Length: 305
Image: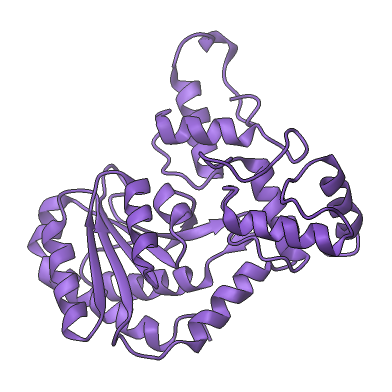
């Protein structure tokens, strides 16, 4: 945890004590994960990924795809320079490989899509003339694509997913959307990666996820945001959902997060964690109406004016 910038008491060496739990919680918050204080598989993977810096290894397209902080930095640098590597998600996929190839050709290098020392040096040289806090081209593209779409639910492809316990709510939301002409995929899976893959295969234009909240922060609304990238479409939908459901269940303002379901979906995505479960089930009809209303408002104004 010290490598990740979180301090742990030396008295807890070899023991998962209170300072270790707090360090894990701090790391999770910094990485946009659910701050549980438990080092689960998602947190461990994020710890491993955070150890990579650009230049530590050669980056290229392979299966399984390479993931890490070095990939995020590469995507951000390419995006600021105008090469569309897709959203800054730290996953070296086909979009990133194409952007590397385009950059290499523009820089007079062999366009092989492999990011090694020579490509990184070229990025560093060109990046000196561009503000590193500049906006990624993927962010601009998302906004333009959303603004070009018809302002109606008719024929909109929407994925509605749930991790378990909220199938009644997702069915009700799906019915509301279908009544207004939307093409809806309902995904019931405990695994966020499986849900993201299903939504991507469906080519959904937006993803709405529902999960049972727990602990002191039972209710939360999240959209995808990472250093160097924010999904403005996701943030706008999250804000509209917050406005609609706060009268049904008290919910804090939305936050940008990096959980797998938000990171791995290719479209604007929002995750609503709602609880306690008995209250959610009692208000399932009200919630479905509120969520449908938020999506209806979102297609009319998908990004903040």
